[in-house]
Amino acid sequence: MTTAPSLLRRSRVVTRDPQRAQERILTAAMTEFSAKGFAGARVDSIARRARINKRMLYHYFGNKEDLFRAILHRKLATRAEWLAKSPDDPFEALSYWFDLARQDTDWIRLLQWEALQTGNGRLIDEEKRLANIRNGIANLRRGQVRGLLPRDMDLQQLLLAIISLTTFPLAFPQITRLVTGLPVADPEFRKRRVAFLQQLTTAFRSKGRSA
Image (cartoon, rainbow, N blue to C red; front, side, top):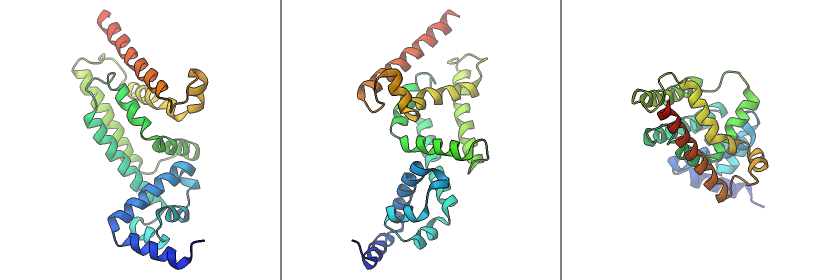
C-alpha cells in the first residue's frame, strides 16, 4: 500500500516541471471525462490519475469546468490543424477524417456523454466550438466555389453528413458489429469502410458529371 508521504514525494517530483505536470493533468482529465462525462468526472480521480495533489491541479486549471475547457481548446486546436491538412475535395477527405476519428475515440465518447448529460442545453465554450464549425463550413464553401460541390448544396447538412459518415461506426460500435459482423477495431473493418467511402465519392462524382 502506498503511504501518504510517498504520494506527496511523487507529487513534488511532478510539480517541479509545471509543463509536464499540466500535460499529465490534461491526459488524466481526458480519460476521466471520456469515461464518466463532465457531470460524473471527479477532480479527486483526475488528481490521482495524474499523480498530483488536488491543490496543485486547482492552481493550474482553476476548477473542473476550466479543466474541461482546457481539453476543449486543445481538441479544437488539433482539429484546426487537421482541417488545414485535409484534402481539398470534401468527399475525397472522407477516409482522411475517418482514420483521424479512429485515433481519437476518447473524444467521441466525451461527446456522447455530453449529449446525454446536456441534451439541447448550452455547451461549455459553445462560441469557440461554433467558430470551429464555421471554419469547417468555410472550407466546404471554398470547395463549392472551385466547382467540387454543387452550388445549391446545403453545406451545413453536408458537414453533418461528413461527421456522421466518419464517426458513427466508432460512436456506436455495437451497431457496427451487428450490421457488418466486424468489430470496429478489426483491420478488415477499416479496410472495408475506407473502400466504401472511396466508392461513395466515385458515385457522387459520376452523378455530378452526368448531371
